[in-house]
Image (cartoon, rainbow, N blue to C red; front, top):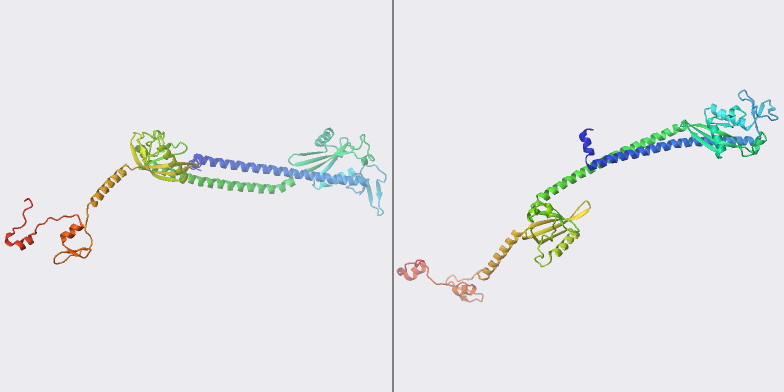
Length: 452
């Protein structure tokens, strides 16, 4: 990965959060994997311990059965060593078929069973005591420590594992049936010896290896999908941030370069907290910091044209805009130099980072008001002039010969009388050149000059 790519990934707050998420996800999955593997290992040891307990339990059950029978007979073979310790009548007998049998004790039978298991590579048990008469019953270091612990603490069992084998040791107590064959200095219930089982962990570990592979594979898949999810989320968030930044830049650029005066204000004090260059110029503010020290009512005369207090009306309109989302109205503002001017005001509710505020768009309408007043004056003048003018319209029936006009009552009257009746016009009589020549002939020299 290039330095530029790495800088792009970890750059910015989102990149740091993504890297932290990757680390946390990796640590979480690693911790879960380690805990799972450790629990599986402990479960393997528990299985081995359970096996050892089961073997000891079976051997004790076998011993108790032999004890309940007093003893048992086994075939005399070259592979079966004699039981020299067990001295009883009828130790050797023959069956009617000639088969030779040897009477053995429960301890001998258990040792032979254990030797058979050991020869087959199976878990085996070991009978031992602190003062053995048979060398086979001698205790090793762990077994000696176990008996010492049983005598000291009164415990009945001991479990040890070295990572490869599990040892389970259980105490043997003196029973009434033992006294008939053995001589003890202690009464029934005293510690006679113990039995231990030795179970290799390898067989259970082979079974657990399959589970470990599944556990590791599932964690790797979960880690991979999590990493992909985090990277996709980061990409989506990064794109959203870039889009948001671009949108904010466009909005800020429009805000700053707009020819309309734009400003923002927020509750509860409703003071301006920003204003663009047009707003500063409109209100004659030297800087945005100076402008932000004012509120709409403080940049207004005491009362509006309708007679209401500016402070009271401004609060009402601001709260209405926050509730409805927008308000448009005319307002009389006051510049910082004390000059009042009329304005159109548009309030728009906006939201950023979970907080609501208002954006105000203010337009100076002094020129529009002046033009409106001029138009109204002109219209008034025109209305006054039109009120003094009467005019004729429509079809006027006039005689093609004498030129009389028929009025709406059907009476024919002269043109002079009709026009004077239907308008404010008055007539001054004269004579046109054609009529002058026709009526006066050579005596008519034409109309007199206008200056005469």
